[in-house]
Image (spheres, rainbow, N blue to C red):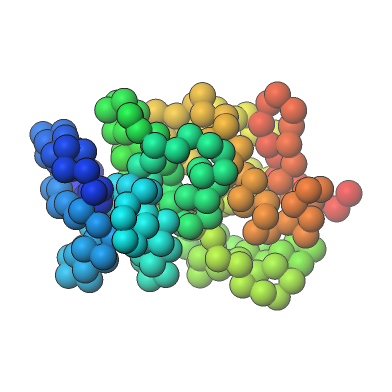
Length: 231
């Protein structure tokens, strides 16, 4: 993992210097770009394992850059943002980000996000999973495809892995910390709000009525349960 290639995209020179220095010292191969257009050009020329992407940049914004990357790549993306509103985090995830870190960030927190994203990007070992059909929901993990009532619904790599974990532990109450550590890695466990955002996004994409979930059920104060049995 330490020789993974990371692209840092931020319009602040100091942030780029700090991240390059910190990540390079840990053995990562680091490139930088100061705007979205330059980042997209680098991605056309080189292969990266992870992108640290500032959400608030002049010109092509971080969100627009994220959407452009996601249109053709499953590379891991962690958004860097000074915004701490839930709406902004949801917007970042909906654009295709795997996670986010709020500025000013703690280096250890950032490294935890980097390690967790690299563990699952760009693809997870889903190929052996059998197709699943449940009340209008069709999941083909080996094709990385989900259909809702016959229409293809696009999931981010993280959403797909979270769904895979739910499905492979169907009808079982899964505590928050267990889900976080299984999908994001051992550095996670207390980020219940973080998990809630991903679950809400996943519900919007696969549930017939996200406000009244049929598949991903909340177990109050404990976690979630993926229900396959008809009520």
